[in-house]
Length: 46
Image 1 (cartoon, rainbow, N blue to C red):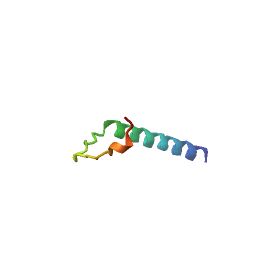
Image 2: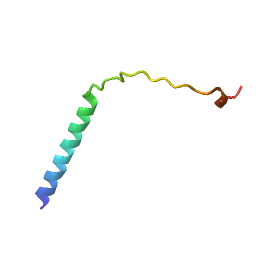
Image 3: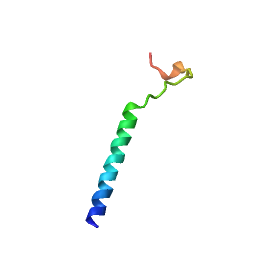
Image 4: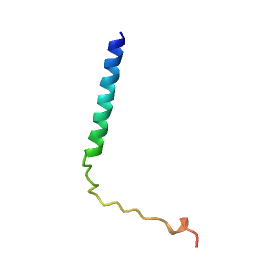
């Protein structure tokens, strides 16, 4: 049982490490749509 627990811990550490490497090297594309929103003048104090 002890060897099985160590195996699971090592497997979990490898999975977490692989996920971190994937997120660090993933080239996320920039948004391609332009967003415009009209703000009311009443919301701002003068």
